[in-house]
Structure formats: C-alpha cells, structure tokens
Amino acid sequence: MSAEHRKPFWLFPNLLSLDAPLVAVVWLYLFVRTWRLGYLPWEAYVTLGLAVWVIYVADRLLDVALRGGTPETLESRHRFHHDHRRLFRLGLIAASLASVFLVVTKLGIIIYKHLMLGGVLVAGFFGLSMLTNKTTGEAPLAKNVLAGVTFAFGTAMTAHMYRMELGLFDLFASHEVICFAVLCILNISAIDLWEHAARASDVEIKASDELALTLPLALLGGASFVLSRMENEQSSQPFFYAVLTGSALLFVLNLKRAELSMDALRVLADVVMLVPVLVFLAASAP
Image (cartoon, rainbow, N blue to C red):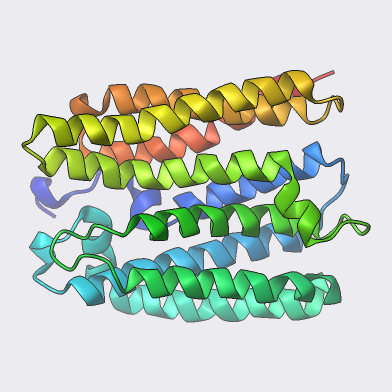
C-alpha cells in the first residue's frame, strides 16, 4: 500500500464505524451508575453496541449509494465503506441477526414497549438521510437533531427499561437525558458545520457557523453546571460534570479546528464524548 493511501491507526475506529458504539456503551454505563441500577446484564451493552453499529454502517452505505460519483470524491469514512462494501454488508447482516437474537432471548419482554418508538425514530432518521445533498454530502439540520435524539434515546432507554416503576414520559423528562441529547446533537452537527465553514469563502458565513455551535455549547455548559448544583441526589452530579466536560472540550475543539484536518476533527469529536467518563469516575469516587 502506498504511503498516500495508508491510513493512520487512530483513524480506523472511525473508518470501521466503531466510534459511535463505543460512545453509546460508555454513556450507558454512566446512566446505569447515575440511576443506581447496580448490575446491568452484559447482553444490554452488547445489544446496544451492535444496534448502533448497524445503524451507522447502514447510514454510511446509504450515503455512498445516494451520493454516487467516484470513490476519490468521497470522504475517508465513506470511501472506506465503498471500498469494503461487501464486507460491511455481511457484517451488517450478522450484527443485525445477533442483536435480534439477544433482544428475543436475553433481554425479555420489558424492552418491547420501548422498541416501537425507537423504530419510529430510526425510520425518521433514514428518511431524512434521503434528503442529503448529493453533491456536497450536507445533511439537513433536522437529520442531525433527530440523530442526536435517537442516539440519546437508545442509550438511555437501555438503562431506563430496568427502572420498573418509571415510564417513557419519565425518560424524556429526565434532566440527564435532555442534557445528553443536546450534547449528542451538537457533537453530530459540529462536523457538518466545520465542513460547511471550510468550504465557504464568505466571512459572514464562517462567523454564522461558529456562532451556531459556540452559543448552544455555552448554554449547555451553563445548564449542566446549574443542574449539578441544584441536584439533590449525589449520584446525578457526576453525570452533569461529564456533560459539562464534553461541552467544554467540544468548545475548545471548535476554536482549534483550523489547525486540524477533517479526519482528525472527526476522531477528536468522538474523543470529546469519551473523556467525560474519566471526570464522571473521579467525581463519583468515594
């Protein structure tokens, strides 16, 4: 393999669509600890990871099919999926069958009352994927919002379904879920905003893209700090510290984006979602 086509090792989690499942599993652990669920079956973690991987791989394969063109015109992650599409399709089938098997045989009937809403959200996400700009690859804002909400719902729901006395309203009314959903939306939207700003030559457009990310991040960081002070339950405070950390890191990454390649920004955007677990563990230590 020539040097110009050799991929750096740190890029492979993104190329293989392993980054999002890892983020989901890590934040599932945070929800479990925050809501004091004690033990969560390993099948729940594996099923969530497989489901997220299936959705992300399917979305990237769909993007490649919709955008067409030559592989050279695609981004690294989409070009990688295009070049290895047969293997990804096989993996997609295997992971889908494995996740269905775990849901049916291991997770029990408790999950079914949540799956219908999850299916509607995922269907809406793929429906909006069809509206992606075929030339630039830009996704409509609604897709990013729905993607963030779906990701947060799926992650939190996997823990929430074991809170026997609480329903779906309690899930969506949870401060933890709301803050996490907003963080996911901003994280997903950041890449599109960075790409749009990089293509733009108008200074006002660049400034608008900057404000579209920095202002919501500042508001989310402020809200997370206030909630951490207001929360009576000690177990919830570390969670809001984690969201505050993710917001702050994404804010810093946004300021430094001009110094980094788009591939590096995509990887670091995932790192921003993983580092907060260290803050959570430190804050929740006795």
